[in-house]
Length: 241
Ligand SMILES: Nc1ncnc2c1ncn2[C@@H]1O[C@H](COP(=O)(O)OP(=O)(O)OP(=O)(O)O)[C@@H](O)[C@H]1O
Ligand SMILES: [Mg+2]
Image (cartoon, rainbow, N blue to C red; front, side, top):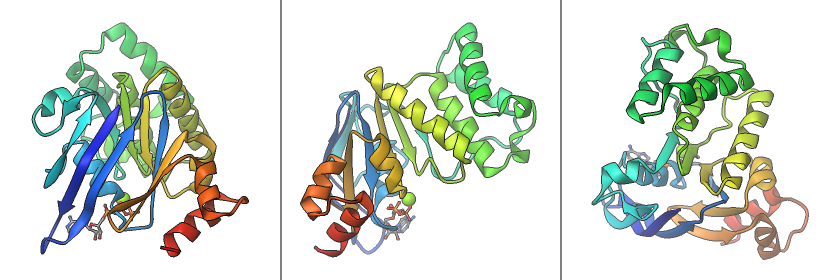
């Protein structure tokens, strides 16, 4: 469960890029975060994950405040950023072992998960190569595996489909659904509305730092009075404010 309570953030000149956001992401749901470029998705995700300090409000992850209990809060989630940066000089396998050590994942379990997921993502052959030789998509796959290695209760992803080939994107969508079905939370930002429509139990739409809609895809279509596509409904509520 991820809970944002009256969260605001400014970068420069005191202009709020996030303006008093409150949001509850319940357990057992795949929750999509959608909005135009510059709306504040990455900023929000960076506040949830403790990368950015929060100006106002609080964020609780499984009840732990990222402000007052940052280490406990950080144990509650796994994060795949929009730019998949890892330690370039390590091999993929060394990186996964490093993450496994950080999160105390027993070696048998580690091996099982790495074997299964690297096989599903077609990454097995590259695990002994240095990360610096990986393509964008390969790095992304490695980060996805590293997050699932410690089976976080909350899985947070920023634009995870970008750079993934169709098969990997399909695999990832299934992993996200599977993760939520086990009672976990998946919170991800995306521009790919077909993906949101297909896998999200709930979505939030953010525009200019404000949440302008929270509900199901069907409810968004009802609100926009368009029954055909989520894309048209999204454009209508973004433009029609
Ligand atoms: N480091 C920064 N310094 C100053 N302003 C920033 C910084 N990062 C983001 N912003 C501003 O904050 C606002 C929100 O940006 P953010 O990256 O959160 O948007 P986004 O919804 O993730 O967009 P995209 O869909 O393009 O990834 C934008 O107006 C952006 O210009
Ligand atoms: Mg972004």
